[in-house]
Length: 88
Image: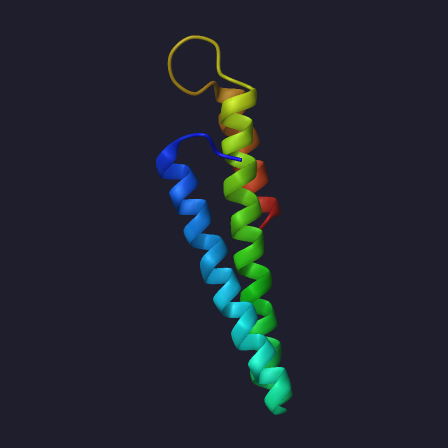
């Protein structure tokens, strides 16, 4: 979990948005909505979860594997780029 207060606030906001998306999906399924919109909502939830995973994982990498010296180490930066591309 991100320790930085701003990152933590951002992650919690994402979780709240995801909760809202899941509740909307539940309402759509409960009301018998057409498959197309339901599938779009499922894809949106999956994308939001992937974004959350990327953000938390990036924070973990930055916090647990600090770059030596000042700034972000090139290898750390490459790893973050790989994580971002994988989770898209």
